[in-house]
Amino acid sequence: MTWGDYFFFYECPECGKKYRYPIDLMSDPDYGACPDCHVMGKFVGETKDIKQGETKFSDYEYV
Image 1: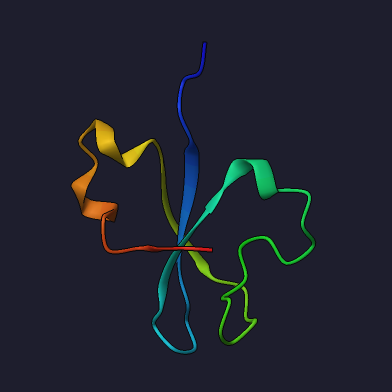
Image 2 (image 1 turned 90 degrees about the horizontal axis):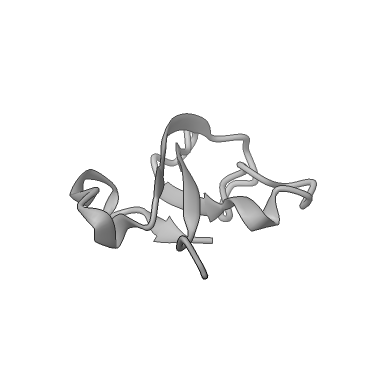
């Protein structure tokens, strides 16, 4: 049985990009960093699979 993905959501303080990381990538040394600027993002939230009603994070890009 699967419970779906779990994501951490970030906003880049440098360029303003909104992006998300799945927790299964936490071992990546760049986890949480902006994929464009490579600056550590500001943590803004976390949630399980956004299909469960978390529409406030629907505009965050997948990393």
